[in-house]
Structure formats: structure tokens, C-alpha cells
Image 1 (cartoon, rainbow, N blue to C red):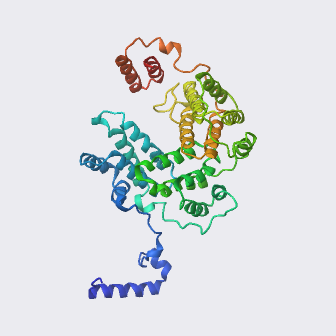
Image 2 (cartoon, helix red, strand yellow):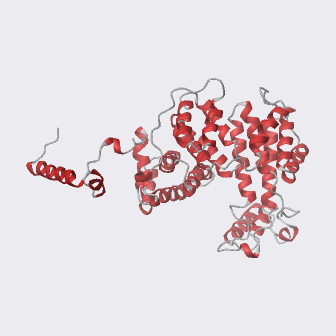
Image 3 (cartoon, rainbow, N blue to C red):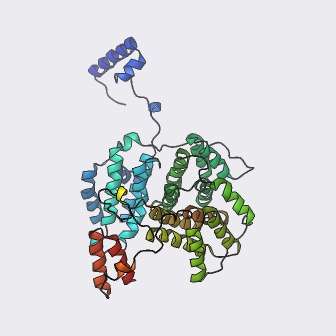
Length: 435
């Protein structure tokens, strides 16, 4: 029981009389009305992870790095920090802030990069992304404006059709609340099965952020545990609802038709390996063909029993060719740090490569239906974008002839110098020579 002074009591009496005289609405505007627990949504918290998650969310960005460095020096693993940053981001943005989900999607790659660096530099990519992550959360108000809160599941899911179809129906209606409640019910079951049901929404449109967010949300579970799967995966539910634009590319009609035509429903995943010539042929079909033709070619290969890895490799090679054959920015597209001929991170090829990576990874952790569907949609996503491309991929002969170094050390030095000079052509040539 809290002890109250006579002054506190009289102050509350006076406040109550004022509220009664001006009315509750004006009193609330004046900050006089009491705040009841039911006035604000219940907060989503993370148990023993909460202190570190809150640190990521509420520490001013300019004060964050010294705190994180001290934690690293005292034994905190980089993966622990990345996991906390991911949970803080998910709670703050719920997959619905452009800069926010870009920071989220960069977390696992930063940790992967760190493992390739010398010990004394290992933390750098992680610290960079965590700073960016916290800066964005702070710019948006930190915990005061967080999006994710506990959600009540629907009482029962229909038993006459897949739960993923029910979820997709809600996201197509842009009904975030219904989609959230549906996925909460789905998430009560097996984590892998819930992820498979989520794919019905992810496969509903081709968008780099849609598929990469879905993959990175799954990948982060290795750091935070599958008990946090619902929190992380509901980001995709909200994203798909918010970004609903109808069947802009014809995919919604094409995918079920292709699955049916090639009799992929109920089929086991194939194991036939492919040689380089086969993979190159499929890659060229995807790169130079229409979306419909590329998806059909991928489906035909899967129906013939080709291993998903072979089809996925062809998709990645086609996406990579979109990068290497990109002529770069034109005169009217130049901006600060993006000169004529440069290829920016938001280019067609870079986005295609990000998407291909995500579709392939999702196919690896999915049931057979979604393994097939993810690769078919991945081919559909990659194709139809080669217009305006150069005929020959980088590096061009005139770039290669300027690279005179032969040994690994000098070639890497040449590549580093070219990167620092923002000379993409020379950097590509040096790495090509390096092999």
C-alpha cells in the first residue's frame, strides 16, 4: 500500500473537482484525466532478453556504441546483440517502416560478414548496422510509438482449406487485424508449419522487400530461438497487408495454373543433379525470357525431378547477370556518389540477386509445395528485366587489360583501391582476375 500525504489527497480532490467542471474530454487534453491501464495497449516484452532489447530501442544512437563495445569486451556475443536489435526493431516497426525493415534485413548479413574478418575488426559490421537500427528507432520515437503488441488469436481456423489461404484472404483485403489474429492462431502450432502457411502471402506478389523480410525473419530465429517466431514472422503478415496492390504482375493467376499444369501438387522433391551446361541454359532462359516462360521452365525442371538446388542456382546466375550487364546510370540519372556508369544498390540486378537469395533459402526450409512454389516465383521474379541491358557482362576487355597484377595480394590491393575510388569497372576487373 502506498502512503499518501494530506497534500496529495487535497491535490487529487482539487483535480477531481476541476475535471468534473470542464468535462472529461477537455480534461484529457489538459493532461488532468487519470491514465488507466486499459487506455494503452498491452506491451510486448521478451523476458530475460528485455533489458538488452530496451537498450537497443531507447538508447540515443550517439551513446550506443560505447555501451555495446563494453558489453562485447565483457563477453556478450555479437549474435546476442544482433538478436536483441532484431527484436527491438520488430517491436518498434512491425515490418511497416521502410528504413526500419532495411535495418532489420541488414542484421544477419552483418553478422555473417563479421565471421570473415580478423578478430580485432569482427565487430565492425555488426556495430554499424546496430547503430543504424537504433538511430532509426530513436528517430521514430523509440518505445513510445512501437507497433507490435500482444495479439489475440481467432478462436478457430476453418478446417475445410489450408490456413495459409485464410491468411492470404485477410492480407488481400488489407485487413491487418484479421490477418494478425489468423496468424496468431496458426503460430500456436508447429513453427515450420506456420512458416509454410505464411508463404501463401509471400508468394502472392513479387517484391524484393516482401521476400527478403520473410527470409531474414526466419534466419534470425537461429539467434533468438523459435519461441520468438511469432513476433518476427508477423512482420511479414503486416507488410503483406499494408502493401496489398492487387495482382499487378499476373502472378496470382499464373502460380496455381503452373503448379497444376506440371502436376506438382503432392509430388516429392527431386534429386537429379545438373551439369554446368544445363544450369547455364536455364539461367539464360530465365534471364532473357518473359516471366511466364521462366516460371514454366523452372516448373518443368522441377517436375522432371531436377534438384531444387540446380534450379535455384540458375535463378541466382540469371540475377547476377542482371548486375553484370547493367550499363549503369545515364547522364540524367547522376547524383551525389552515383556517377555515370555506376550501378547502385537499388538497381534491378541487385534487387534481383537479393530476391533470388531469399527465394532459394525459403525453398530450403519449406515443405515440397512451397519448395516448388518459391522457386517458380523466384524465376518469375527474376525474368522479364533484361531490357536495356548490355550484351556483354562486366568486366569488359578494356577494363581487364588495365589490370597487370598476377598474384593474389596485389590483385586484392587493386580491388580495394578501386572500391575506395568508387571505380566499379576496375574493381570488377581485379576480382575477375583474382578468380
